[in-house]
Figure 1 (cartoon, rainbow, N blue to C red):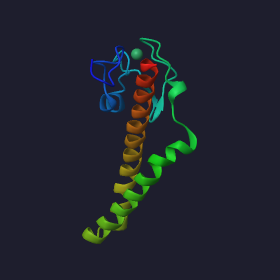
Figure 2: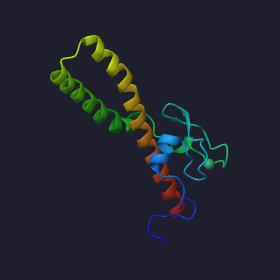
Figure 3: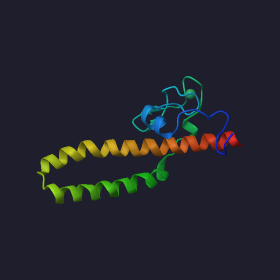
Figure 4: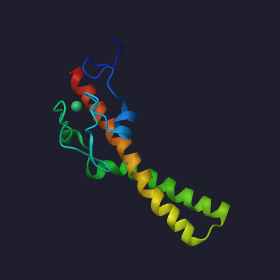
Length: 123
Ligand SMILES: [Zn+2]
């Protein structure tokens, strides 16, 4: 077995599948997300506890602040390039900002969960 692969998590979904398709990192069932970027308390298929590994509070600023800065820079740059009307900018960014933020949080939380489970299995 290669380094970093645990016997339980080997062959199970990675960060991308967990973030996009809500696949449980242990069994692959689609049970990970209970809200837009919130874990369910546990997997209904295998019983894996998710709530204990959910990052909360200030630790999420490491994800939210850089993504916010990138979105602001993208909005300014796009406005400079296209000179689109304000109503169009408002419509685009109202739809885009929540989607990007939820996606970034899902990827970060899935990565933290999988890392914690692998570390736990290695012990
Ligand atoms: Zn499961």
